[in-house]
Amino acid sequence: MKKIVFLLIWGSLALNVFAQQKAPKWMEKQKKAVVSITTYKADGTTLHNGTGFFITEDGLLLSAYSLFKGADKATVTDTNGKTYPVSRVLGADELYDVIKLQVEIPKKVSCLEMAEAPLQVNAPAYLLPFVKEKGKVKSFGNGKVEEVTKLKETYHYYKLSFPLQVGWTNAPVCNEEGQVFGLAQEDASGKNACSYAVSAAYANSLAITSTDAFNSTYSTIGIRKAWPTDREQAKIATYIIENTQDAKSFLETLNDFVATFPDWWESYSRRASHYVFRRSALASDASGQAGCLAKAEADLKQSIELSDNKSEALYNAAQLIYSAAVSDTTLKTNPNWNLERAQAVLTEALQAQNIPAYHQLQADIYFAQGQYEQAYQEYMTVNQSDAANANSWYMASKAKSAVIGFNIGDIIQLLDSAVACCGNPPSVEAAPYVLERIDWKLRLMQYKEAVADYDLYYQIYNGKVDDNFYYYREQAKFRMDDLDGALQDIQQAMNIAPQNAMYPAEEASIYIRQKKYEEALRSIDKALAIAPEFAACYRLRGICLQRSGKAEEARSALLKAKELGDPAAEKLLGN
Image 1: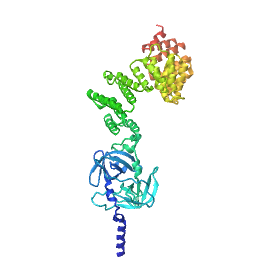
Image 2 (image 1 turned 120 degrees about the vertical axis):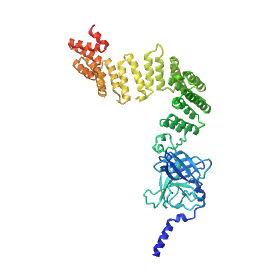
Image 3 (image 1 turned 180 degrees about the vertical axis):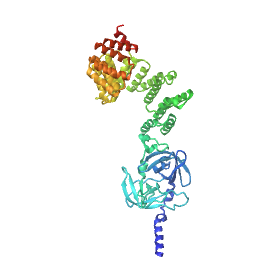
């Protein structure tokens, strides 16, 4: 019996030996960097409690992602009982259950120094849990590194020789110098015979990118996310976030964007655009909307003052003013937001730096003002430079077509250049230019050339076209007397949209041209079954019957067409 009692006592001592050993000298100081974390749901109720630790004096914190998933806010409490709010999520990895956060602190906090090198097998390891009570550290974990495996890139995952006690998860694991190398994680097998540590350096390396706005890792956390450190990436992020927020919420986001990059001219320009184009959502009355325009004006002024390239900032301002002016006619009387102001600001930009992009905007302004000859000349200035692009050629064609006495051949040549800018074979960008070119070719009765462009359009979309395409190409083929081709196209349109009465009526017209009157009558019957009062169909029926020698029946059909308002029927009746 005494032997059994002795064994029980010895076993109990063995289980707690790590808590009885003398703590390293550095541990008393380092424990101040460990904090208790409380996360909260949107309704204010507690979600989770856990542990984390500071790694910088300005409040950078590492902890477990799982504590924050679904959280709307969070606080940390240090060993002295002081509580601070978590202000931002800086980076996270749900798979490895790590998160990096910024805590809002009034002054410097105690922090752990990061280990410079990964630990090797058999290296001593010390776990430092959160200890609320004052005085010396009374419990801690210690043992050795049993295994080291690769995590990502130069980072590692460690197996430790000691198990975790309650509340030790996510506590810092340090080397013998007191430098942190990992966050404690439980044995996934549930045996609790050992523990693990995920690289603290890896957790510290986490950063948010411009595409993370839609990443579920971040979207499930309601706490504000940090901006990417690269400001261009941050700007891209604003465009992604914009689609997920209402106007007022996004203004708060842009205010934070400006506060994060206060010395960057583009942050003010980005906010100015929001003030202008979303002012009706930001303010319900005219006074409030005027205030938004005034704030936008102030932001533009600030962007110009901060920019190292004044011409670029002036051009950007001119572009914003122009876009506002052409999208809102009520701004015509606003001297700060009309086309004349856009032109004045752009003139300053051109005086500072004469580049083709500025001439394209100048052309756009002239075009909006109805000064088409001047617009054409400006577009051609762009087209004669290395900056020539599909849109500059296309807009040159639009401006040219608005000048009195234009030549259609010139318009087609300009559109040829627009299409040529879209590659060979042309990309989808060329599609509207091809359609525009078709329209001009049809005006010149160049039906064969128009059909060739329809074929090109078909190739651009890899045959993924709708019934309208087949109808319009059928019309061109009909006019060039390719009746078989026209018939194939209209039948394709009918297959796609069988309830459109226009298509069997068009099929009937082709059959009439081919003198296939019986087939034409069947097509007419299909059209009238869909639209019983389709006047043109009765006229077509009258023509078929007339040419088939059925004069009385033809007259009856034409009278019906006249009754329904078909203007051509009366001529065919001869009275």
